[in-house]
Length: 360
Image 1 (cartoon, rainbow, N blue to C red):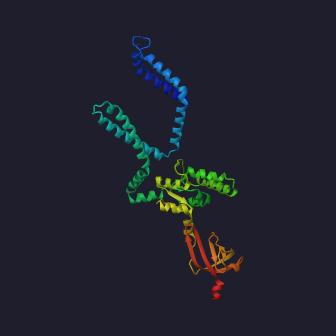
Image 2: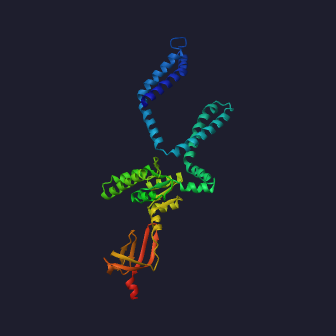
Image 3: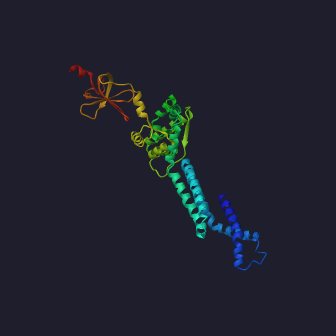
């Protein structure tokens, strides 16, 4: 179908050029007196036939170019297309105004060549400026919206887009958090995150394959069973290779919030001034508070890294390092908490056996 449309465009163009140019050729060839040839209909037919013959060579190149252009436009994010088009429009308007002013100069080259060059130059510059300044323009529009009122700002803050990364999808706790209603707004799953998840699910490694399939099951549960709104972002950033970097870029453009349990991605978001919700921080916040000097009853499971240490675990998976606890491996003992270390990566409790405390 596209090939036929291109051929029809060539024929129409040939017929139009034939009506315009063929009389000039008739004059040079002294054929003005031949009425059979020197008329608009014959000129249009001749031009159309010539361009139709050209299509047998050029049509494949034109079709390939149109398909390449179509694929590029489909893959490009909608924000890039909008701001690039707006910049192109401003550039063409400026070029028209400058060209209109140059018409007053009675110099053939200035009147004919300059408007064409100005159109190309200002059109290109306008598109590039609009395309490369889209992030600043989006930030500007977002900042103006925030000034409309404090109550409205707080409401919108709660309804910001929540962008999920691969690690938090595989982790699975995000589904339970959404079900409880603590996570408001729209959940956004970028297409490049889905592709990475699918790649993990297709891995030859059994562990990776199971993790990828678990992530896909979690997404199906969020989308089908929960009442929260879920959207798929189809755009991509082909100039960026890393999925985490693409996610940070998308968060900047949409003014969204990255949801993750990746410690390194959490730090990158903080450095680039991108809002981030860390599931590990939430889990640590809702864990029971343990204070130094508190008594706990635990079972020592294994050796610790340091000499004569034992390791125990709470029901929520928190590690307890028991000093001088190696002799109690496999036993239930009472311990006294000496200190607590809590970070975004998790929480660790240090303790010592209560029996040693009584002996001292």
